[in-house]
View (tube, rainbow, N blue to C red):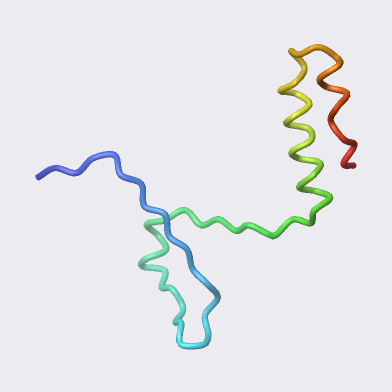
Length: 70
């Protein structure tokens, strides 16, 4: 058997409450990322910007229907 091109995604919580610290021996095999929760105004700004750029190819009657989130 041969396994190729796999992607492993893991998630961890902070240590405590029965969870132990992850060791450097395991961490060296992964890329670490951290994501902070965004407030609703920031999320609205991001998605409004994406939507406006997508709708540029449509007539103005369509794009003016987008509510001003920010």
